[in-house]
Image 1 (cartoon, helix red, strand yellow):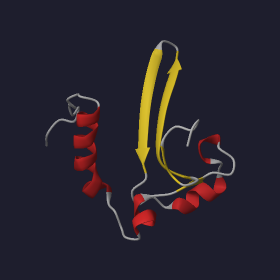
Image 2: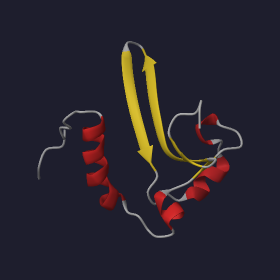
Image 3: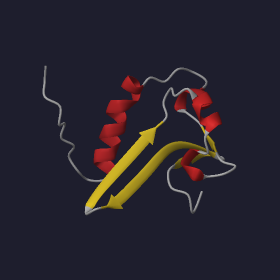
Image 4: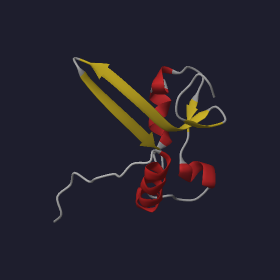
Length: 93
């Protein structure tokens, strides 16, 4: 919900998106909670947002959703939405 960034399910954040700028360097980040142990968030104020929660795809769908099942369709959608080509920096092998 505005003005909060990310993807939300009610008052719980499912996907966090962030940008940090400093010392002439810009960093971007994205975290999609697939099968995250949500109990860790009981010890912090996630994203500094009092009264807001965190959720995962597994919790919302009521079944285990592994990162490996989400990664390819997520990256395909990212390329389509942002009209770009993603290049892996990992070397084969």
